[in-house]
Length: 114
Ligand SMILES: [Zn+2]
Image 1 (cartoon, rainbow, N blue to C red):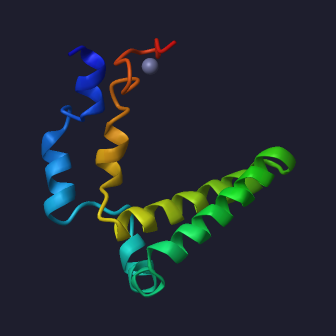
Image 2: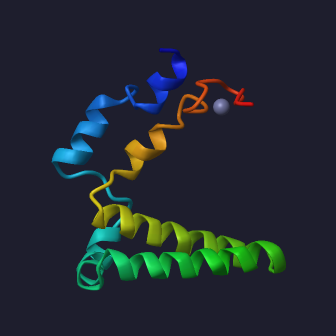
Image 3: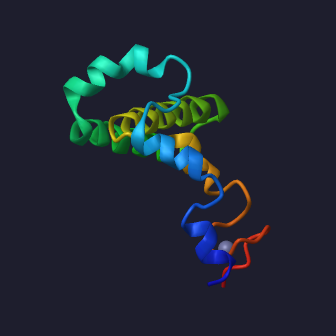
């Protein structure tokens, strides 16, 4: 198989992927201390609903609002993404690392996908 499949399967950081499945992983800042209890009470489905609502607000900020509103909405979307990842036991640092060496599909920088 070519470079594409190697990157898609995440062999770049096997130790990070291993940690994310089998033990504690890094959650940015004080996010879990701040929201962990509420996240567990609310559950993944309700949290996903809030995430989608914030994505809608981000859409409006991008289309119709200024830079400060965009920063605000990006931060809200990120916070809900962090909450969801924590509730789903997904290590976002490991997820982001999938793109660290270029396009995970074609393995190139810049992307050479058709
Ligand atoms: Zn590509």
